[in-house]
Length: 295
Image (cartoon, rainbow, N blue to C red):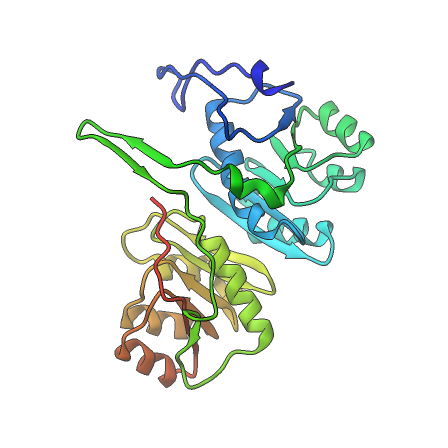
């Protein structure tokens, strides 16, 4: 099914009318089933985060509401297994996006999902998923070029139209600083960068707990207690893990992170009080130099 064949008549709710149009920044893709309004939102969220890891084995699970889990792995199977372990409840109903080709072995692990998005599918994988009524979306535009297709973000309000450029932020050596007395290892820095890249695409207020290049908990859209929520979900997997936040943390957040045995925190900025609190618990504290809020 080509782009021009997709027909959308209803929005997220059945009583809301909707339509679908391509534009000059439309990526090239094919799908074996018609996509709904919510499907396209979920697919975009998956592509947004996977485009950050296009050159490695990466898997994400997303819904129209947000990101459920993300993992990198030595193989795609490792990454997929990690995503399933990270959030097994939401995995089945989510959109699975892969940075690499889906083969028949992976297809068997995805037979109960609704939508699978990938640069390509082997013939056997595609046939297997189709027999299990899974929607397969093939992204023909290279994932390394995906960000070039991002358009200005626009929100129509009764007050007026809000327009902003897409979020193309990247960490840089000038603003990325370790401000704590203790210094993270190379592996911890890699985990911190991974967690930050995931948090970049999580609805604010974003808290991402990660370890060994996989998320163990994601909190988003909460006005308070985001850190507690994420640590409670992560449970024992928060030990020696990374905590990434899209906003500066409070002293209470640092205390809660210490109780969860977090080893590294990466935040936009940190006051002297926060740095002192981190040093008290021998936690590594990294600042990025800028906030990364997503509404």
